Image 1: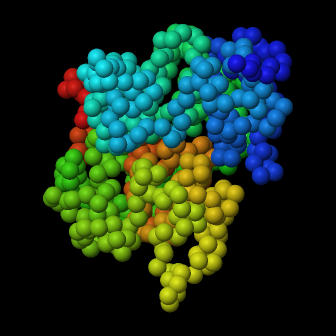
Image 2 (image 1 turned 180 degrees about the vertical axis):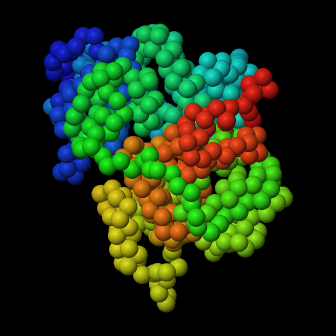
Image 3 (image 1 turned 90 degrees about the vertical axis):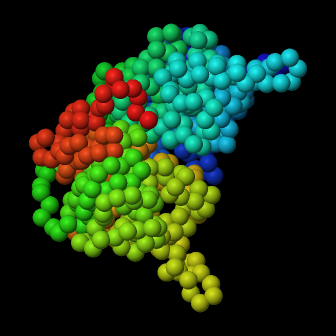
Length: 521
């Protein structure tokens, strides 16, 4: 077997991973420039950056998905590899394990079968699979990662948060293999509420305690600061900071990512909306939702807080005509409605940005411009053909308005970063000027700057006399964005917070359940 090229001695023998003079060029455009940093063994090293910073490209190079430009070196646990010879097999043999935003799970297989795709199927005598042993070993791995799902469940039937946890548990499957394993996590908590994110963060700390190394990419800066030993920040393909986490704070990180001190967009003085009532929900019952009442007025953003399974997402779907209403009523603009479809809700001026944008809010393989025009496609039907040129031009204009960053309107939607995808979905709906905007986890998995842009767009829309109802697992977001927050527990409203009472801590305390009654299902 040919020895892989070695270009230099490791600059830091104590490093688990080193990138030296690593660059990447796409179609003549340099997206990474002379990247040079190292990850200490046994540490948690955070890699941060905004949309288009080169963060995802760096991870794909490290995974061997992208080949970096010639002339650079990647060292893993002291073994050097020239960038033009580094492959996915090299990464795997070197002990690198990845959980990407695309989780790599097969939806139509069970959790156990997804584990077996990586770890192999245990056998009985001959070719028969020992399903009992497979389910038992999978259960052990899930328990160690605090993931409460049935190994026999199909992945497609799991909630998005549970899919993420399963992918992480699978990556940690061989985490007892010693200190020569490096776990690379790309947005692992993006779809998780705070209490589940804390369970995951504790599992990561356990890996570190066993001597393993973690490369952590995240957008929740408070979580990053709570777990990272060191933080590297990328901006426009250049490493602009590499510092102990103790030397940074959230404001400083955002400034590094943006290249300037960002304008303050949150923390606005709360006011009481004085406009007419846009939405009135009266003793609504639908699925897990039981006897919920609330209202939203013009110029008002109302939050909905609750744990997974509380009924918070079902509430939005019922208002949008996607969940059967069993009792109670809904009024929009003072008129009772009984939507039986999303189309009927749209005709009443209601828009819904769902939680799982990839599955429920996009056509991933279609061009970006077609995704942006999906809500108004009828406008471009001219005689016997579509006015495609006009449709594409209008979408390009909206891209500029909402700062959707992409090489061109023609790129597939799936190739965009999470923040740009969410901006495109929001732009699609706001072009209809809906009087009621329903948002389920509107900033899940986006960076701090994209989050600020999304919040600004929501505030601007509501300020024109519209209203918004926002579900979020991020209680800090609810405090910063909303005028009032309604707390749902076990399907029922248990509290409403406003003014000085509306704090992240207060929302978190009210959403908790009595653990003596067992887990929420």
